[in-house]
Length: 62
Image (cartoon, rainbow, N blue to C red):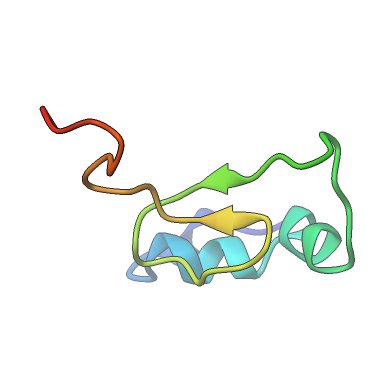
């Protein structure tokens, strides 16, 4: 069990990298084939973890 106070002042991506689920994904865990997790640009790009596009290249209105 971790205490919240251990993570005060750390950014979300750093906290996430220290979790069991992050380690499982890094080891190839994939609950949904060909799925990815969308996060903000502070997170590293991985095969399963991608930042969303700010503009949809298939939609000229965006």
